[in-house]
Image (tube, rainbow, N blue to C red; front, top):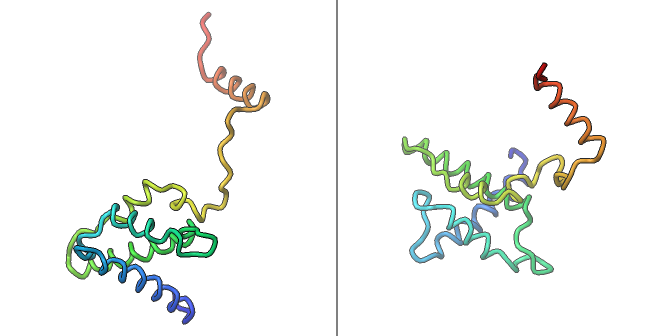
Length: 131
């Protein structure tokens, strides 16, 4: 995050998030922030992009990482345990947590015949046979 353009993007992301936090009643602080607040923020973003889409999973992940870094920095400055709101929220939202995974291919619904035979052979060789 050393490029001026990147710094500006993250600054705007943070200002948007903090503006939302301060606009809540009661205001959401770094110490009171929890996973339900993050969900409410994500839900509030629905419809703010073209084509009526909420934050893309990659954008949401980047924002969550930024929030997590700020929370950790704040905790270190205050000598407190870090707020786990981001981790908790990401655990509930795998589509965001894995947004930057190199492969988003779904797992197969079933094994092919060759894969099933290979698995059976492997498992059978590991189990001792009677007699």
